[in-house]
Length: 186
Image 1 (cartoon, helix red, strand yellow):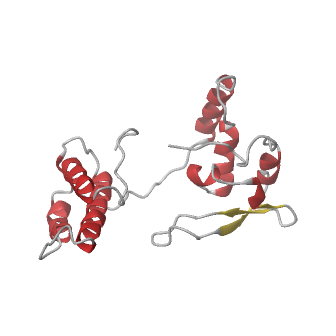
Image 2 (cartoon, one colour):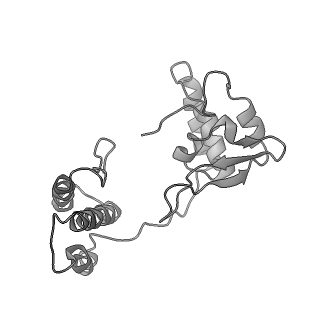
Image 3 (cartoon, rainbow, N blue to C red):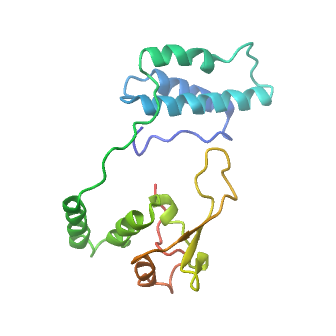
């Protein structure tokens, strides 16, 4: 699923979401099993919402019935576990690239890469960090609404800013923005 290809949220019109997802599921441009799994899960969510609203009556669960066949033809699968990390050379090339484009970038990308590696946080989590979430005496930060399979809101986690991470955060501009790394990632 490319950058401009977004799934409609579950709270949009139910029929719209189901139609969209069925179109995506049958579309031949889905190259990997993982996106198909995601589409199947979203389709199931829309079906559940439609059933709870009384807009759809089904005697069975079509997504659950389809999964064995989809697995058989390898259309759905679990995520492939990553088995490598970026090399020092790859990271160096990234930093050179970011330094060359620094004049037009609004974000400290090299710092964000270092912070991601140093804290094992996702880009979306990093760019949501607020200055008020820092605790100077303990050199920790609070990650609000950390990713969790079922608990989407209120899952706040405190994590330490080890090694050079505190200095990295400390050198970010504080006056203009509420966020430490002011960005809204796509």
